[in-house]
Image (cartoon, rainbow, N blue to C red; front, top):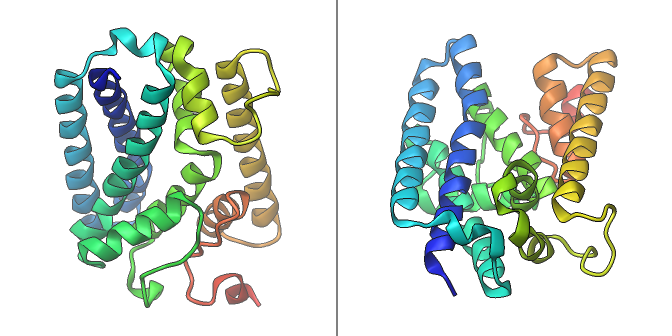
Length: 233
Protein backbone atom coordinates (compact mmCIF):
# COMPACT_ATOMS: atom_id res chain seq x y z
CA UNK A 1 0.00 0.00 0.00
CA UNK A 2 1.37 3.40 -1.04
CA UNK A 3 0.97 5.58 2.08
CA UNK A 4 2.18 8.68 0.25
CA UNK A 5 -0.78 8.53 -2.12
CA UNK A 6 -3.21 8.36 0.81
CA UNK A 7 -1.42 11.31 2.47
CA UNK A 8 -1.69 13.28 -0.78
CA UNK A 9 -5.43 12.60 -1.04
CA UNK A 10 -5.96 13.56 2.61
CA UNK A 11 -4.40 16.89 1.71
CA UNK A 12 -7.09 17.37 -0.91
CA UNK A 13 -9.76 16.57 1.70
CA UNK A 14 -8.25 19.19 4.02
CA UNK A 15 -8.32 21.76 1.23
CA UNK A 16 -11.94 20.95 0.43
CA UNK A 17 -13.06 21.38 4.03
CA UNK A 18 -11.18 24.67 4.27
CA UNK A 19 -13.07 25.91 1.20
CA UNK A 20 -16.40 24.68 2.64
CA UNK A 21 -15.88 26.83 5.74
CA UNK A 22 -15.60 29.99 3.64
CA UNK A 23 -19.41 30.16 3.38
CA UNK A 24 -20.11 30.36 7.13
CA UNK A 25 -17.09 32.70 7.45
CA UNK A 26 -18.66 35.03 4.89
CA UNK A 27 -22.00 34.80 6.68
CA UNK A 28 -20.38 35.65 10.03
CA UNK A 29 -18.99 38.83 8.49
CA UNK A 30 -22.35 39.76 6.92
CA UNK A 31 -24.18 39.25 10.23
CA UNK A 32 -21.50 41.00 12.26
CA UNK A 33 -20.56 37.88 14.23
CA UNK A 34 -16.91 38.84 14.33
CA UNK A 35 -15.98 36.52 17.19
CA UNK A 36 -17.22 33.63 15.07
CA UNK A 37 -15.34 35.06 12.09
CA UNK A 38 -12.11 34.60 14.03
CA UNK A 39 -13.24 31.07 14.87
CA UNK A 40 -13.55 30.15 11.20
CA UNK A 41 -10.34 31.95 10.25
CA UNK A 42 -8.43 29.85 12.80
CA UNK A 43 -10.18 26.68 11.66
CA UNK A 44 -9.50 27.36 7.98
CA UNK A 45 -5.87 28.18 8.79
CA UNK A 46 -5.42 24.80 10.51
CA UNK A 47 -6.99 22.99 7.54
CA UNK A 48 -4.78 24.86 5.05
CA UNK A 49 -1.63 24.18 7.08
CA UNK A 50 -2.52 20.49 7.29
CA UNK A 51 -3.16 20.44 3.54
CA UNK A 52 0.29 21.92 2.99
CA UNK A 53 1.92 19.32 5.23
CA UNK A 54 0.05 16.47 3.53
CA UNK A 55 0.96 17.86 0.13
CA UNK A 56 4.63 18.09 1.11
CA UNK A 57 4.88 14.52 2.40
CA UNK A 58 2.41 12.98 -0.01
CA UNK A 59 2.82 11.95 -3.62
CA UNK A 60 -0.02 12.26 -6.10
CA UNK A 61 1.64 10.44 -8.95
CA UNK A 62 -0.03 7.16 -8.01
CA UNK A 63 -3.48 8.67 -7.48
CA UNK A 64 -4.68 7.57 -10.92
CA UNK A 65 -4.02 3.93 -10.12
CA UNK A 66 -5.21 3.35 -6.58
CA UNK A 67 -5.35 -0.19 -5.28
CA UNK A 68 -8.28 -1.57 -3.27
CA UNK A 69 -6.31 -1.16 -0.04
CA UNK A 70 -5.40 2.43 -0.85
CA UNK A 71 -9.03 3.21 -1.68
CA UNK A 72 -10.32 1.76 1.58
CA UNK A 73 -7.50 3.38 3.54
CA UNK A 74 -8.25 6.78 2.01
CA UNK A 75 -11.95 6.52 2.87
CA UNK A 76 -11.20 5.41 6.45
CA UNK A 77 -8.72 8.18 7.20
CA UNK A 78 -10.79 10.75 5.31
CA UNK A 79 -13.69 10.26 7.69
CA UNK A 80 -11.46 10.59 10.76
CA UNK A 81 -9.77 13.69 9.33
CA UNK A 82 -13.01 15.32 8.14
CA UNK A 83 -14.64 14.87 11.55
CA UNK A 84 -11.59 16.39 13.26
CA UNK A 85 -11.47 19.41 10.95
CA UNK A 86 -15.24 19.80 11.17
CA UNK A 87 -14.96 19.90 14.96
CA UNK A 88 -12.49 22.79 15.02
CA UNK A 89 -15.08 25.61 14.75
CA UNK A 90 -16.93 24.25 17.80
CA UNK A 91 -13.66 24.06 19.75
CA UNK A 92 -12.36 27.49 18.76
CA UNK A 93 -15.76 29.03 19.48
CA UNK A 94 -15.70 27.47 22.94
CA UNK A 95 -19.23 26.10 22.62
CA UNK A 96 -18.05 22.49 23.05
CA UNK A 97 -15.04 20.69 24.47
CA UNK A 98 -12.88 18.69 21.99
CA UNK A 99 -14.59 15.33 22.62
CA UNK A 100 -18.09 16.79 22.31
CA UNK A 101 -17.04 18.81 19.26
CA UNK A 102 -15.74 15.66 17.53
CA UNK A 103 -19.02 13.92 18.36
CA UNK A 104 -21.02 16.84 16.92
CA UNK A 105 -18.94 16.91 13.77
CA UNK A 106 -19.12 13.15 13.23
CA UNK A 107 -22.85 13.19 13.92
CA UNK A 108 -23.26 15.85 11.25
CA UNK A 109 -21.08 14.19 8.63
CA UNK A 110 -22.70 10.80 9.14
CA UNK A 111 -26.16 12.47 9.15
CA UNK A 112 -26.91 10.81 12.49
CA UNK A 113 -28.54 13.95 13.85
CA UNK A 114 -27.60 13.50 17.51
CA UNK A 115 -26.26 16.64 19.15
CA UNK A 116 -24.07 17.57 22.10
CA UNK A 117 -25.26 21.20 22.14
CA UNK A 118 -27.78 21.68 24.94
CA UNK A 119 -29.05 25.12 23.90
CA UNK A 120 -28.91 26.20 20.26
CA UNK A 121 -30.17 29.68 21.09
CA UNK A 122 -26.76 30.73 22.37
CA UNK A 123 -24.91 29.54 19.24
CA UNK A 124 -24.10 32.03 16.47
CA UNK A 125 -26.06 31.74 13.23
CA UNK A 126 -22.93 31.20 11.17
CA UNK A 127 -21.75 28.34 13.39
CA UNK A 128 -25.20 26.76 13.13
CA UNK A 129 -24.92 27.07 9.35
CA UNK A 130 -21.61 25.15 9.49
CA UNK A 131 -23.35 22.54 11.64
CA UNK A 132 -25.98 22.10 8.93
CA UNK A 133 -23.39 22.09 6.15
CA UNK A 134 -21.67 19.10 7.75
CA UNK A 135 -25.02 17.35 7.30
CA UNK A 136 -25.21 18.38 3.65
CA UNK A 137 -21.64 17.30 2.89
CA UNK A 138 -22.13 14.00 4.69
CA UNK A 139 -25.48 13.39 3.01
CA UNK A 140 -23.95 12.84 -0.40
CA UNK A 141 -20.72 11.51 1.07
CA UNK A 142 -17.29 13.08 1.42
CA UNK A 143 -15.73 10.70 -1.08
CA UNK A 144 -18.48 11.15 -3.67
CA UNK A 145 -17.80 14.89 -3.62
CA UNK A 146 -14.10 14.10 -3.70
CA UNK A 147 -14.42 11.90 -6.79
CA UNK A 148 -16.75 14.37 -8.51
CA UNK A 149 -14.52 17.40 -8.02
CA UNK A 150 -11.05 15.90 -8.48
CA UNK A 151 -10.44 14.68 -12.04
CA UNK A 152 -6.81 13.76 -11.31
CA UNK A 153 -7.82 10.55 -9.50
CA UNK A 154 -9.71 9.23 -12.50
CA UNK A 155 -8.25 5.74 -12.67
CA UNK A 156 -8.52 4.94 -8.97
CA UNK A 157 -11.92 6.55 -8.43
CA UNK A 158 -13.72 3.20 -8.59
CA UNK A 159 -12.14 1.97 -5.36
CA UNK A 160 -12.85 5.21 -3.52
CA UNK A 161 -16.43 5.31 -4.79
CA UNK A 162 -17.24 1.68 -4.01
CA UNK A 163 -15.71 1.96 -0.52
CA UNK A 164 -17.95 4.95 0.22
CA UNK A 165 -21.23 4.16 -1.56
CA UNK A 166 -23.16 0.91 -1.31
CA UNK A 167 -25.21 -0.42 -4.19
CA UNK A 168 -22.98 0.66 -7.08
CA UNK A 169 -20.37 -2.11 -7.10
CA UNK A 170 -22.09 -4.16 -9.79
CA UNK A 171 -24.36 -1.60 -11.42
CA UNK A 172 -23.74 2.04 -12.12
CA UNK A 173 -25.96 4.92 -13.20
CA UNK A 174 -23.41 5.91 -15.86
CA UNK A 175 -20.46 3.97 -17.37
CA UNK A 176 -17.69 5.97 -15.71
CA UNK A 177 -17.42 6.30 -11.92
CA UNK A 178 -16.47 9.96 -11.98
CA UNK A 179 -19.35 10.75 -14.37
CA UNK A 180 -21.69 8.98 -11.96
CA UNK A 181 -20.31 10.96 -9.02
CA UNK A 182 -20.71 14.25 -10.90
CA UNK A 183 -24.29 13.34 -11.86
CA UNK A 184 -25.15 12.47 -8.24
CA UNK A 185 -23.63 15.76 -7.05
CA UNK A 186 -25.68 17.85 -9.49
CA UNK A 187 -28.90 15.98 -8.68
CA UNK A 188 -28.24 16.44 -4.96
CA UNK A 189 -27.50 20.15 -5.44
CA UNK A 190 -30.57 20.65 -7.62
CA UNK A 191 -32.88 19.01 -5.06
CA UNK A 192 -31.38 21.19 -2.34
CA UNK A 193 -31.99 24.36 -4.36
CA UNK A 194 -35.56 23.33 -5.18
CA UNK A 195 -36.38 22.55 -1.55
CA UNK A 196 -34.78 25.80 -0.38
CA UNK A 197 -36.98 27.69 -2.83
CA UNK A 198 -40.12 25.83 -1.71
CA UNK A 199 -39.46 26.54 1.97
CA UNK A 200 -38.79 30.21 1.19
CA UNK A 201 -42.07 30.46 -0.74
CA UNK A 202 -43.87 28.92 2.25
CA UNK A 203 -42.59 31.71 4.48
CA UNK A 204 -39.18 30.76 5.85
CA UNK A 205 -36.34 33.26 5.77
CA UNK A 206 -33.48 32.47 3.39
CA UNK A 207 -31.33 31.43 6.36
CA UNK A 208 -33.96 29.04 7.73
CA UNK A 209 -34.78 27.69 4.28
CA UNK A 210 -31.14 26.86 3.52
CA UNK A 211 -30.57 25.24 6.91
CA UNK A 212 -33.68 23.07 6.82
CA UNK A 213 -33.30 22.18 3.13
CA UNK A 214 -29.72 20.98 3.65
CA UNK A 215 -30.77 19.03 6.72
CA UNK A 216 -33.82 17.46 5.06
CA UNK A 217 -32.04 16.50 1.83
CA UNK A 218 -29.29 14.86 3.90
CA UNK A 219 -31.99 13.13 6.03
CA UNK A 220 -30.11 14.18 9.18
CA UNK A 221 -32.43 16.41 11.18
CA UNK A 222 -30.19 19.25 12.39
CA UNK A 223 -32.09 22.49 12.87
CA UNK A 224 -30.95 25.90 14.15
CA UNK A 225 -33.76 25.83 16.71
CA UNK A 226 -34.17 23.86 19.92
CA UNK A 227 -37.68 22.76 18.94
CA UNK A 228 -36.64 22.01 15.36
CA UNK A 229 -39.39 22.34 12.75
CA UNK A 230 -41.97 22.84 15.52
CA UNK A 231 -40.48 26.33 15.85
CA UNK A 232 -42.63 27.29 12.85
CA UNK A 233 -45.86 25.95 14.38
